[in-house]
Length: 342
Picture 1 (cartoon, rainbow, N blue to C red):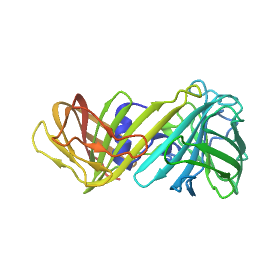
Picture 2 (picture 1 turned 30 degrees about the horizontal axis):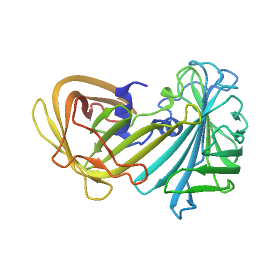
Picture 3 (picture 1 turned 120 degrees about the vertical axis):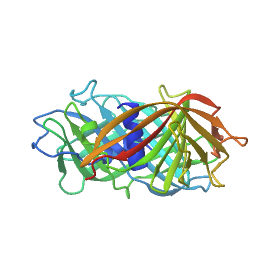
Picture 4 (picture 1 turned 30 degrees about the vertical axis):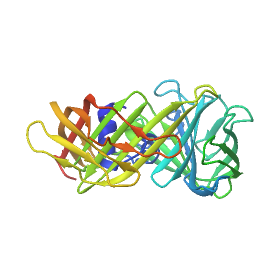
């Protein structure tokens, strides 16, 4: 998925993760009926949904997990492939996700019946815990056709088993039975999945992002309200290929945008999880457009300089340390409007 498309999806949906959009996006078109026999299962996603838990450090948070498996190339079957398991704890504006790569056979599913399992054994995500979870469908699945060769099958799930998470932080640990979790299984088919099955709403707005290394800050405004999110990726020393993602996300008033051919955007935040200010000042522009549900979006994308204010824009992440960026050149600022409303 291109950088521009991700930015547009953020503007339209104020989303915090691309994988969530992939799992829940509705089809833009429905024409030809496709079955799993016509195209192999090319991507599978299990999303547990959030449950309230209390950790050993008496932190009241929401726990969720997601497993993803995909084929080696577009259109190829994902059967027997490696997968990723991501476990998230969220409290207020702050969330932390531990992501692990699992060997083939650790996450299996049957897209037709909605049954399968996620099993790490005792070593695959050590020293961060273990998972032994089975799932089964609640009722019949639904098929959404996203074009002539692409479809997805969605099952509502009941999940069972056990999960242990050791955060190695002041948030403590959690372990318990997975018996009250009701999630979703998405089974994608076709070479264009998941892009073809994600609908982009026709909504006008402004979006921006600034990034350096493993840290990014993104913002989006639709109407009079917006969102602002800081993300940080940290590679874990073990197990192999594991990483932790720290995130702080808040709602904000619409930022102040100056008029003119090369606008500037004052980024500010209320007191609390985020403080300080920064400015994005455009330096050059180019037009672009994209189809959305029932119409099209047109807009302008500017290259812009991200400049921290006297009090730098800082996301006060409390567990692993605050998130901020230096002043940077060559960042992105975008403005969209609906050219053909639905």
